[in-house]
Image: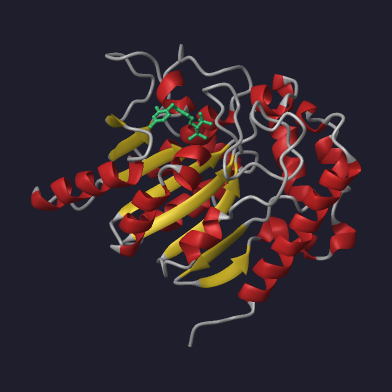
Length: 301
Ligand SMILES: Cc1ncc(C[n+]2csc(CCOP(=O)(O)OP(=O)(O)O)c2C)c(N)n1
C-alpha cells in the first residue's frame, strides 16, 4: 500500500504559479494522478477548469505533454493519441484523459462511450465538481439533488446521471470511484489501472470551493464528509466485479454514517434549500447504496 511519505517524496508534476482558485481540488487531484502515473504520460484535456488553471498557451503548469481539445472531445483525442503511440510502437506511455463532469457526463458522453466500447487503451478520469464550474457554475448532469447552481437557483430537481455505472455497463477492465480527500485510495486505483490494457475509468469527486460555496481551507474536510456521510460511495470493479472500497465498506451500515446535514451545512449551495429537495438527496443516496451493494453481489463466473 502506498504511504503518505512515499507520495510526498514523488516529484511534483504541477509547477508553481498556476491559475487554480484557492482550495481547488481538481489541481490537487491531477497532482496526485501524475505522481501516481509517473512522467511518461500524455494528456488529453477538454475545455474545463483544468484547461484554464494550467496557464495560458504557450505556457503550462503541467509537466507532461497536454493536448487541449474541444469540450466534447477528450476521449476521441485520447483515442487518437493511443493510435499514434501504437504506430510508433510506444507501449509504455500512459494516455490520460482528464475531463470535468460536464465534459464527461453531458457533452462528451458519446465520445467516451465510443472509446470505451472500442476498449481504447487509456485511463479516463472524470474529476467532478458536480457543475460547469469554470463558466460560472451551471448545473451539469452530475449535479446532486437540491444543489443550487446558476441554472438551478432554487435547487436541482431530480436525480443526476451516474456515469460510473454507465461506464460499468460497457464491460471495462476497470471502473472506480475516488475522492480528492483520499489520495492514497486514488493513487492505488490509478496504479492498478495503469497495469491494465484497455479503457479504464475513474470518477473522482473534486469539491469546488467556489461552486459549492465553502471556505477554501475546507476542501479536504468537505470531500471526507462526502464519503463519511455515504453521499459519495467509493468502489471499484475489476473486469466487471464491483467491490466496495475499504473506506466505504464501513458506511454500508447506514447507522455508521455521519448525518448528511454535516456535509450539507458546510456548503452554501444548500443554504435555504427546502426539505423536500434535501429529502430527495437522501433518497437518492439510499438508492445508490442499494444499487451498488446489489451489483457487488453479482460475480462473474
Ligand atoms: C461546444 C462548447 N460549448 C460550450 C463551451 C463553453 N464551456 C467551456 S468549459 C465549459 C464547462 C465545463 O464544465 P466541466 O466539464 O464540468 O468542467 P469544469 O469547468 O467544472 O472544470 C463550458 C460550458 C465550449 N467550450 N464548447
